[in-house]
Length: 433
Ligand code: UDX
Image (cartoon, rainbow, N blue to C red; front, top):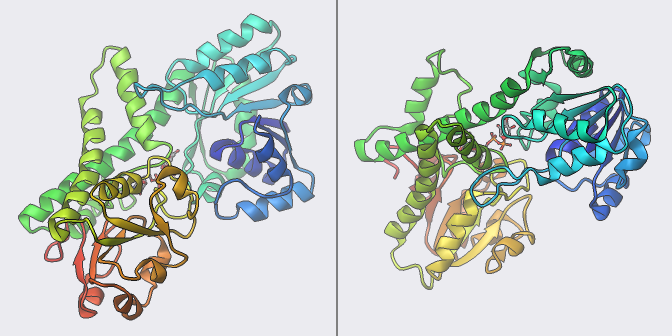
């Protein structure tokens, strides 16, 4: 099929590229000229495994192209995906300006039998509004379809190609829905067909439920510190219950971040409120996520005392490994809190370097984990990048002024570190906090 994708952020770019890889002809549109120019040259704007190779391959075989002008292409397309951002407004509600602008733009140039697919995460009821908006300008045959994304950053291409399910919501006739279902057939996965509202709800409910698991286990980890239980074993024991499951998100740490969980949980609280349903559990999920970051900072202050004059090495900045995304990363809150106490911060992240200065101007940047530790009074691990478990601890020990580690991701081996003379702190692990 001939496909168009409006918006080349995480969602749009991966969607467009993977559909090209499946054999479709795709044009990705964005109004950011610099981004489009660099994509045309095969240079992706984000860090994501397999992205470089797939981009170059599909450009060279002519299955994907990029443009800043949506109008020029609409007439040639069977399906147009809207994958623009829906940032949070000041109340935590999704701001739909970009989505509605894209719908209006499409409606001015479309022809009969085209399908408009809403990929952006939108509040329940939005697909109906988009349909109405398009109808105001275009009176021919068209269909709007809801098709939420469930890709995780850092494994987005893998997730696209190996989905747990594809959710497609549409109107009664289901012709557009079938067209979209056909696009995903090669992935041989469960395709759930439903109406708009259900499809839109599945996205928010899934992300909010996953975030709930994280706030739940983080709260249990704080309890473990008081009682002498071990959070790693607690999570292991819970996951053995098949109703909870081996893949449950029960890794305790400094809390969830990123472009989805923080935004989607708050948005669902608001959507529920707007519909007269108080979602107290989710309000607590948000609070627990904040408390977890504060708890980690308190732990550092409790153990190090006065921070003025101390140098703290930070390993890991991105909100999770495998990405350079800093949106709502817990590292931002933690580093800012320590800077407020006048600590000197030296950071290292395999994917984020000078860009951090735009978010936190007062940090120093090191080129390696070892360099970050030079003269440090403590080391913090804020993202569980694989390379941090492979360092030579003897070398790190020689570089640091004081051998103290605060592991915000529970990723390091306390026994190895204690043998090297480190004082090791983590979250909710008995005997080592
Ligand atoms: C998420 C959803 O998983 C995906 O389906 C959705 O469409 C987009 O949002 P993503 O934000 O890329 O994906 O990351 P994810 O791997 O889900 O992690 C989110 C955050 O939770 C990260 O900050 C991560 O560190 C944290 N997390 C995850 C935990 O603290 N503990 C866990 O057990 C799992």
